[in-house]
Image 1 (cartoon, rainbow, N blue to C red):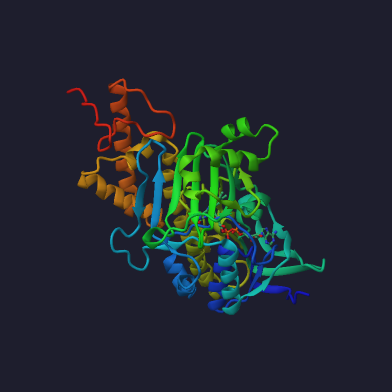
Image 2: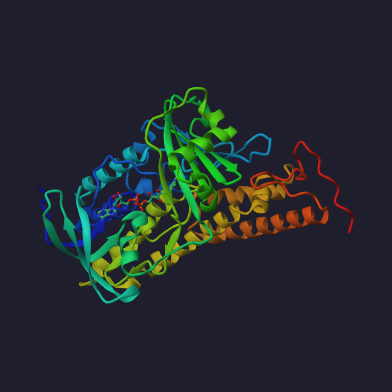
Length: 456
Ligand SMILES: Cc1cc2nc3c(=O)[nH]c(=O)nc-3n(C[C@H](O)[C@H](O)[C@H](O)COP(=O)(O)OP(=O)(O)OC[C@H]3O[C@@H](n4cnc5c(N)ncnc54)[C@H](O)[C@@H]3O)c2cc1C
């Protein structure tokens, strides 16, 4: 039976990357913390490809070397296939001589989250698993409400009322406090369905590309191939809701997933001749949302509980962990100073920084779903030093360098301008636009030489 007290400095709902990072770093600073996790580690979770800019938080948790010694190859970059008949294009975060901080890993989350959980306990956090937060002690309504603790139902069916100066909602996309306070709104521009499974018996790549992930454009969206170790890969299909609805029609999402895998050459080629699906295909829809406030009196939202944009650039775990590292800096100050509930104002820095980081990813992701922007990114003139420079800067976004937007946003603007100019070029030529997901063949530097733009 869980040995729970009725009062902590901080109670944390959820033991994923956000919850465990908060628990670990707050306990390390001497606060009495309780992490409550509904499931039991190791448990499956999607979100397997990590970003190099998490190195700072992994170091602070003392876990970088642990991950380095784990069973997974380093991930140095990603290949993008645009289904346009040309070779996939590979990007590396660290270019030719990657140094520490230029790679991450692809991890099975059951393994990764267990390590995070155990490390938080070792740092002095209290944790209870198979225990569900069933209610929040709330007063008032909306963002102005205060929260002074939670009710927890443990595995033996007992209910515990727990008071805390700070309640951290790290419940993932369930966003329990966001829903309770009516803060959560879906993002209508990102209306997608994701279907995913794991395959074994696929070719194992060696050398620098052993952990390189694949992002494959499809007419209905895109697919991922994320290699783990020993021939095991994660495959995901992310399709527009409307396209998915057209296909599913009384069938199971798993059938739609298998159709897409069979139809998408770059995916089934990567899986080799005898892939074996080794876990049930799962699906999730309408996962993009944000909350209008990230903190209030006695509460704060961490990781996905505050917002989730889209999986395309593997940003979720990074935002959850690096965001939580920043949240803890604010929380520690406030907890050390006063008494009573931690006020909203304590989280001004965390909230501002997180919003900026989310804005960078959101902007990039919106653009990613516009074909003309993808073309400009994927098919720039290869010999232009200026364009390569811009592209390298934008690769920083893909590495997770998003908490200081001035480092990347001007380059994103420039690329957006280039994309517009390219699209205008197509129109002026009356060239036929390619079907979605295909790069236009007029783009310079490829097998088909570009037609000459008429002199203006
Ligand atoms: C299709 C898809 C693909 C993705 N791919 C990637 C990727 O490649 N890379 C990447 O970085 N991110 C990816 N993500 C995002 C990633 O899954 C999340 O961003 C990440 O898991 C967020 O961590 P978290 O700790 O905020 O939430 P979670 O990992 O979701 O953890 C929340 C925890 O809260 C617990 N919980 C919920 N309710 C309660 C309750 N009432 N009481 C107690 N505990 C509770 C849950 O059991 C869970 O363990 C993907 C997301 C989707 C949808």
